[in-house]
Length: 256
Image (cartoon, rainbow, N blue to C red; front, top):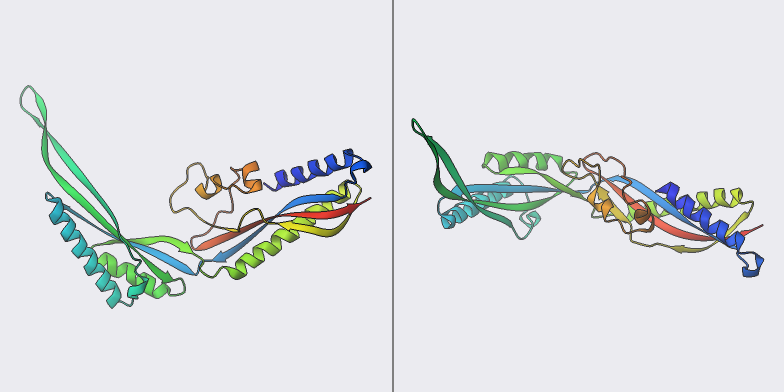
């Protein structure tokens, strides 16, 4: 991605030089990238329960009751009720099983009774610093018969990280501009303009295995350099670490 950005800047500079003095070409525009790694300050835990029954209504009632009991147990363990996210996810499907019955000469497939499977899920927000409560909550949920696992990370207070990423992006642009101007025999002057094509993005390690080593957020990266090289992957992040990326387009004055 960086190589593409430098190449684009060099092409722009050469084009300006070839246009001659008639057009008074005296600026250089470069792309700067800034990245900052920070720990998440918020952790989300997904808690789900599953019930199977021949009667879908009964399965739904039993499952809702089981999830409610699990939530109450979590609250008793120290989880704040307000941190249980409003709204629940629900999945309902019918499971048809069959058996193979054979006699001396033939075998037939006999359909068994279909059962309904209901899965209810809720997400709970935790302060990342409260590791003891997170671990205790996972244990309590599992003891209630539910499945529980960390489902995501977030950075709710990103102001410092955003400022640092932007600062690094501007510094990166200036370093590239110095190199390009020197390579062309020009002197880099004052900064004339800074443009941020898109708001800084927050990336995290995908929860599942990515066989192509592609982050879906990067595939849909519509920033300038992202479109030039959309398949360049980012840093492999440890769980709980987030990467803030800023990109700026900076124009400088140049002279011979």
